[in-house]
Amino acid sequence: MKVSVVVPVFNKAPFLRECFESILSQSFADFELIVVDDQSTDTSMEVVASFRDDRIRTLRTERNVGPAGAAQRAMDVAQGEYIIRVDADDINMPDRFARQIAYMDRNPGLGASGGHLACFGTETGTWRFPVGTDKCRAEVLFGNPIAQPTAIMRASVLRKGGLRFGDDWPRIGEDWMLWARVLQHADMDNMDVPLVHYRRGEQNSTFGSRRSGYREVILHDVFRVFGIPLSDTQADLQLVGLRSFKEPPTRATVRSFREWLDLMREMNKARGLFQPAAFEKRLKDAWDQLFFALPPYGVGPALAHYRLSDVRDPARLTYLAKYTMNRWLGRLP
Image (cartoon, one colour):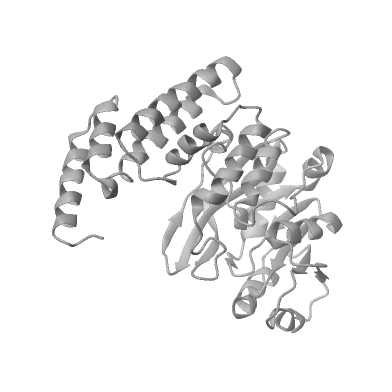
């Protein structure tokens, strides 16, 4: 069989019909659809049962294990050459499967790939992910190189490398940990197109979550997989690069983060873990993006960032002045 489509389900009844219709009407039809009920307490499985299609298989977890554990149970029995991951509240574009399968067939060195997300619901716009194998690899220390709702994985790479989701992994960001492991065995990339309509709202697993908490666990794991030492203090600085602040950032925070980026640059020069130009670009992006997260914490941290920048863009001072004025006038929280 060419493809196994994996859909973990936990209390997604209101969204399942649209999701399943988008799967079963794909232009590529040679797949099995493995649905894993993670102990739902709503009518999710009744909705699933209403679809009469021989391609559908259903499993039920022995206990609620979260999306990673549920997906793994499906992946353990998947028969396809490729495994395509679908979130139960999303809508797949009609030719998603066909395009991704053709892309993986053309690029046998890839262990996994994905694409962009077209958001709808409480948030609109396109979430873009890095395009190019070097950029994907450089991204893994800072975020997800592939959006799990768009992922297609080569089953042989997973099985040969013994790569699996863990039941004890965080229930948010678990894919990031898997991608770090995939990158030890194969390249990853993204198609430069949206592949999924990604529903944003309260049903998302990240809704209302404190990102620094689960991201800290993930960072320690990802750095360990790459063999990069990471102290708790350094993890806090890496979180700054993700704009996830455990404490309000200060001038000292900004200075320490700049020093941390320099240390990471030297680490990569010594070890060659990441393609130099791609890694340098990712370090620069982390530094540049930080500036726009600082004004809510006062003028001091933002000015410290400006003074430490290699290129001092006056437009940033204008942005800071406008932000500060609007906040003073009560136009911003």
